[in-house]
Length: 307
Image (cartoon, rainbow, N blue to C red; front, side):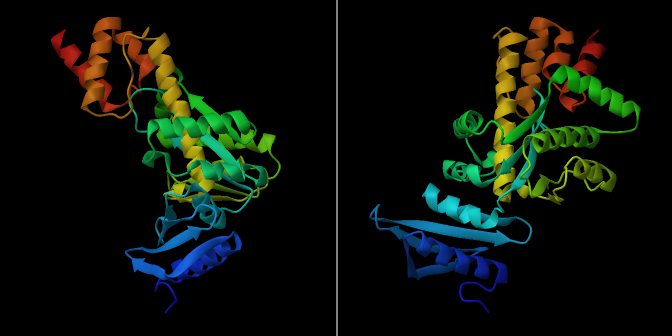
């Protein structure tokens, strides 16, 4: 049995975190440690700030580590303990969204990129839009050679998907191509990548091997829910920001600002597509959405039946 938890991994990490925070000048309240479901919570004081903040460390074998604290500097310290310097992360956005492109992004967390962790990094799905855009704005301005993006806009996406379907392939093959291209591009810019972590989207060994081969020399690891790794979380933020920017661009150009495209693929997307087609005609769909989604076929079938 450990000092802080019966979870040996969590117990060992908590001990390391405790010692690291002390070295950084924080005052950890030893009597505040409390084991909770899947985690450990405790209080930390910073002499300079003269206040106490709560810190919670969560860990499961499936999801890895996650940290909850209002202090961004403390969170950055904890994230660095699970982030091997030189690790590149890969993630995508737009895969489940009806409108807009498919975007993949690769980001390397090297020595110079560690300040990014103080921006409040977490899985983009847990962030508000303005938070995503603020973090992306800083990264794109201050670290332009730290990431690479591949964006497949709707018109290209639809022809690409059709060609793949004719070959008996599917969306995973497109994701493989996009991830490979983003990682290869990043590898050309940076020679300090020591390891690559990709958010796993398939069990197909052939496709995973293709992505691995796009990394020059660094080993590639595939993980489910890989956003617990800081570099993957940052890649997810970059990909989501690029996706949201593309929705705005399509709305302004193709749709002449008459409609504002939305993310997701629910009923609201069905209604919006119908309104857009009523205004611009059915051919516009190829330029704004992923036409293999059921949202599109539902409307087309109804239109065909009406005709």
